[in-house]
Amino acid sequence: MKKIGKYVDELSGREFASKTDAIKSENKNKGIKQLFAFWKYPKNDGTCRFANGEWCYQRTEGEYHRFQEALIEAINTYEPWIAKQYEKHGGLKKEYVKGGTMIGRYLDDGDSELYHQYGTLSNICPVCFREWGQPYYANNCKHTVKSKELTPPLTNKKGMEE
Image 1 (cartoon, rainbow, N blue to C red):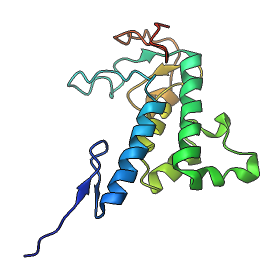
Image 2 (cartoon, rainbow, N blue to C red; image 1 turned 90 degrees about the vertical axis):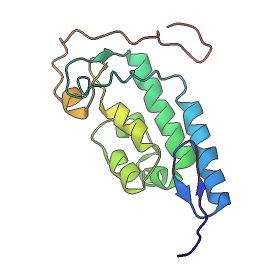
Image 3 (tube, helix red, strand yellow; image 1 turned 120 degrees about the vertical axis):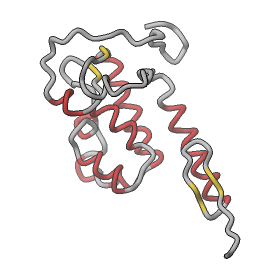
């Protein structure tokens, strides 16, 4: 038996062989958390009903675009190798950052912490802005389902209710 030492990024739970790598990861995850602090995630009700499409939450067009902008900023800051893929297309734009695009593949293949945010974006219908529990329902949204309210109310960066 041999003794090994590991360092853990307490925000992501990822393990690292060096303290320096763990600190870099924690700083990256703090930055990501700050970028998406405005977004209120649905509470887990302890069942799979939300994930199975039993209901959705209504978002606004502004929230959707703000989420896209935050994801673009996060990719440019924390995953510049992905942003570089889009330089010959005029840079990373909203049209490339939505569900079902190569961004998801890059984030997944790169084992990026931002894949969770991409998954959230993929769960939102880009037409009526309903957030579902999985992309299938967002891709096949009928735009007529009554949505639930998110509690507590959504707030902007200044803490004001929107």
